Length: 237
Image 1: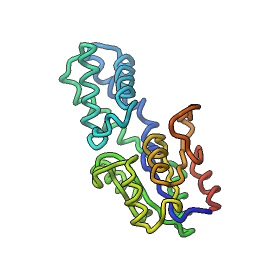
Image 2: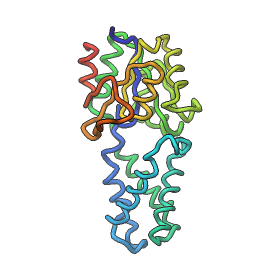
Image 3: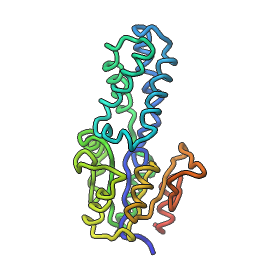
Image 4: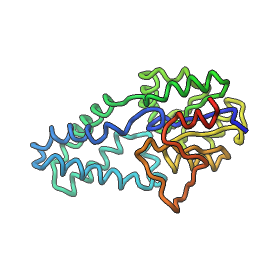
């Protein structure tokens, strides 16, 4: 049976937040390479490596998700200390990166078409996003997204984020659907797939041709798609 409700993640599901990461770090690290006394590529790769290690176990560090800028500076401070770089430049480099990445945010080309198509067919729509309230609300205003949804749940406002089942249960109650009547679409196996399935929803994993589903992984999605037209096809719209 087709669902009555479809919920979406925001970052890297509807909004491209990853494509500009490498270039944003390049620009920032090039500017600060001189004062740090190192090669910009070495600086960039060291920071990115330590960031990836920090977020590897998202459950262990989930308390940082509503303070992403603080988390970035926290990790960078460790990186700088380990490599003998002057810590006075942690915040300005972090802020420079943040500004560059913010400027490069963009909706995926299939996002609005999908939301409008599903809404025209009568599906209840929800947006479930982790992260700081002000940052995520800013994205919704910038891209005029909130009007497409019957419910918006932001971790920094709600008090909990995915994968906690309360997030999904609140969204379901708001749209008046049961768990078996809803699909959730997201790129994060831990938060989106694991969280949705634990709450009884059908979990669709979207990889945007940049993520790989490894064999033997802990979270196995109910459906795998590369882009949103595949979701529309599955829902016959």
